[in-house]
Image 1 (cartoon, helix red, strand yellow):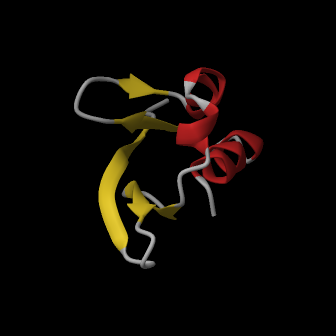
Image 2 (cartoon, one colour):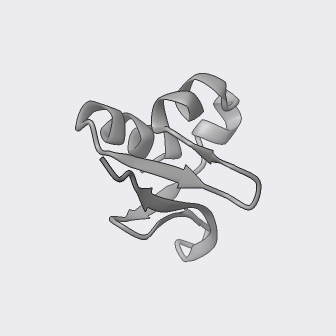
Image 3 (cartoon, one colour):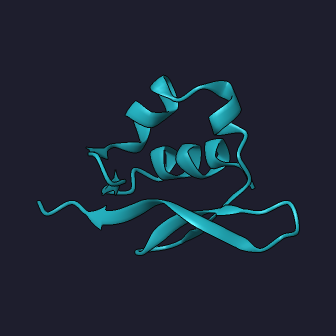
Length: 73
């Protein structure tokens, strides 16, 4: 699954989360609009409620791309 697929799923399901890296927090829609096509093609895995991590070419979990933070209403 690609990062783009994961972000599109979060948007389509209207999941109330922010995606955080070391610099800032974003909504999935913002990342879909602003990340490069190359970055969006990155193989990734989402552990619901925790993180989105890169998948290495060997099929192993790599670095965490974004931590998922629940939006408080």
